[in-house]
Length: 117
Length: 112
Image (cartoon, rainbow over all chains, first blue to last red; front, side, top):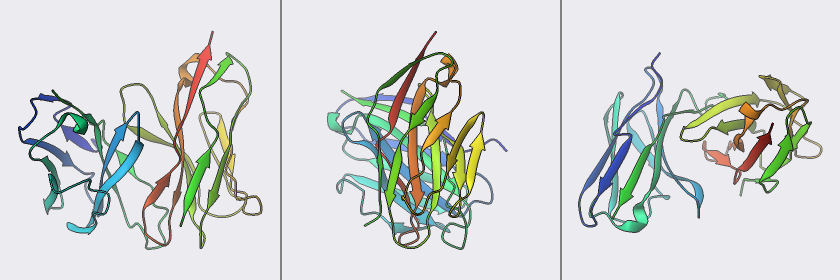
């Protein structure tokens, strides 16, 4: 399996622009997670989906952030408008059967490094 | 709520030294426990896991034992290498929320 795929790997944009990050989970996985990692705040869970349905978006910092999962093999995280404080590495992760007696093991993508100037 | 506490880093060791990174947790129910490793510029990778009390997870010379009585899951390696330099995260699978709860991460630097 190719693992979790994220694109782009690096994104540099100007403040105010729209940014879209993409994720393809591992085939057969039914949970998908979006995380943000910064030096100041460490690793933060933004939102997660089960069977394409958002379950918990309490970590989404504000209305400028939105996430969708139109099908089992694709998800997007959008920031509109972007601000310099959104600069971070954004990770997507997927897992199978979490909460059903499973072990909650998640597989992470390589991340997207976002820089907003 | 559920939480994970790791020893603060950075931890600096010489090659072939013994490694311990402490991890303690607070949780309701019976969580699974994990150690993830993040090498520079990469995503997190699962290093090892344990799903019930007294289980020992092991991989690449690293070990950790799920201790329910002390609510701990300390990571150990008998002889570290320069290539083990990375950030190590302890995590628990929360039976309340279904999420992974991560510790703050511990940076390990191994010098030749």
